[in-house]
Amino acid sequence: MTTCHKNRGGAPVGMVADLDPVEAGAVLYLRLWSDGPDGKARMWNEFASTLGAQPARAALGAFEDVCALIARQGRRAMMRHDVACRCLGADECCFAHLVAAAVDNQREDALLLATLLVRPDAAPGLVSRAGDFGLALKRIALRAQISEPVPAILH
Image (tube, rainbow, N blue to C red):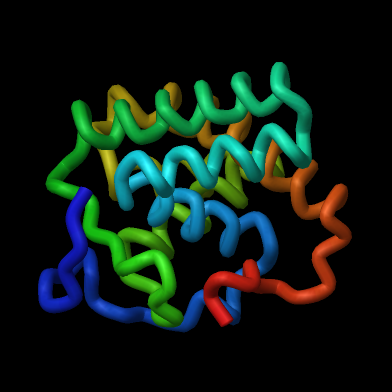
């Protein structure tokens, strides 16, 4: 995954502030994960402190599977913006909507969105693991009692 604003997948299509908590979390954690060891450590700390160690491991396992599927079966390299960027790239938007549709059991929509990121034969596995990750994001949002739709880092 790379940062690129001029490429089609990195073109801004909206603002992170317009996303709901699950979608915004999906984008933030995608950015953090892609930002290297410090971002991964921060993600682990946030998940573990909010969910507990065992559920955090399960959530991060689901997220790792999602990233691996996109990397191995992706139609092209997925583009992302920097962690603190307020705008939302096209690939990030698709990813956020995929996670939200998967966790809300909107299977047909989730499968359609997944096929924009990966080969059709990989889409069902991506939807399944995105739903597992999205469930963790819902639990984090509920436990944190998020009053704002965007994580503080993006303000």
